[in-house]
Length: 480
Image (cartoon, rainbow, N blue to C red):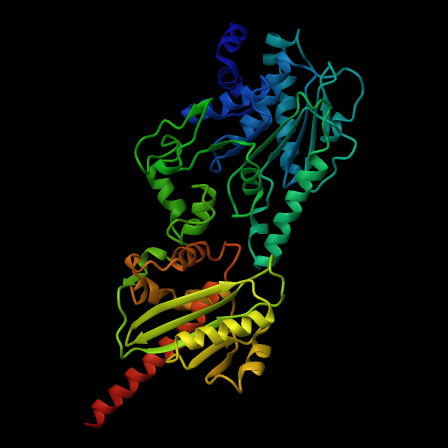
């Protein structure tokens, strides 16, 4: 009976009926299981050769992709060979053991034992690294950046390629780890093809970083993308020829029976849960939060004109290398401030050489002659720039950064949250505003943070100056 029902119902029915073999809890069905299974079946039929699945943690991605699907495939194609990896080899072995437990179970053998079973000859199956079917099918388990040489398969699957902690730390170290993981996937794993005609690649993960393996897959243009945020976003509805996200209301939950609104709220809370940045990445599949992480971009004010009496200054963040095609940017900003209001007047940004940077400082100084104080971060090319221009321009001041980038942003974020920081109104048509907002929203997960650095440097100085003027005014009042 099960055999016929699975034949008609496909992978979803197989998951439903085999659940008790590998899991002790009750099976809880949801539409997203059907959607993921439909795409995995399309891989089996040869209709999809590259599949990217982004779903939140705890939504059965590993069980579906790394346990049930490979065993279900063996029923029809017992010689299928799959190479499975995760950031931790123990996770790959965990899922391999569950798949083996399912294949060798009395339940499975009673229904499909005549079609496929474990290999009878001695293999290295007990090592937990690989095991075979009696038709020479294979399930090989490894880790990201682990061994793969010598093994060839019809499927290459990576389930959670990145360690969550590897997406934290300095932007340089995180970028290098992301690059190493992409290199492993594109070299070691990509060459392990048993039969190019049957070969398929599957990446299944939650988003952790804007430059993670999902980002690479999306940049290729060849991956079918199944992206299911915990809270529905109509602008990013998942829809392919094999199925679609059926939700219609913004914020509608992915799996309310398992993750009700109260549980999702706890996950979102910065104190008890992940906080906005990590929640947006892992649960919304948006490593760059729409509203921002440390910097809530929705709180920026807008201006159409700036008081003529406002003071002005410049803020510069320089760079180390002179390449025009890679590395960080040079950023210069012109600011105005009066009382508790801080106005960003202009942003210039580019991968400029030393000589070009000198010219950009001159040009911004010419455009904003009242911005006599010119703050230059005392790093990278900053000191050299100041040395060259000191005799030509007034007000050049080297500023030693105080604390880390995120700490500096946290120190001035209350000014933004309070609505004290203003950007040009959209009617003014300043083209740099959109890019500035995108970098602020991405911070500290974004690829670049030069505009944020220049902003925090400026706001720190302007805030200190405003407080000093207020204290002086209070002293004068007392004297009177």
